[in-house]
Amino acid sequence: MPTLIPFPAEGGSTREPQSSPMTDMIREELNQLSSNDYMVNCILERMKPFIATLDCDLSLDMEITAENEAGVMQVIPSIQDLQSRFDGIISEIISERILHEIHLFHIERATKF
Image (cartoon, rainbow, N blue to C red):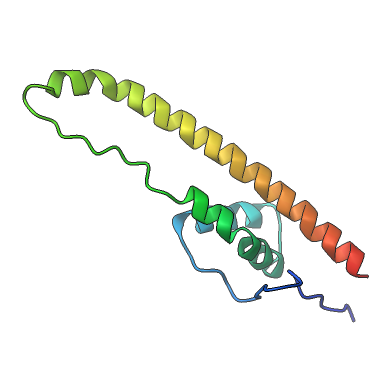
């Protein structure tokens, strides 16, 4: 029978990390990579500070008045393009971090045997 190895070694928890849209997105990506629930929860626990860093409000609060309406309408396509670029960059960063965490998970499990 295989031996269960606690991961992470210090301060970790096997309980399911608190849910957020960012956490749900990362969980979905991990599940698509055929990760088991234990591995997913361990990685999500380790990624909590990273998720908190990325889980921020990037909304643009802007007042539209009759005087600035035309100008605001002109910049909307540029703002949408910027948002798309941010989304793409953040997705790439998350994917790289997930792959890194999976790699670390396997290394740490291998060194425990």
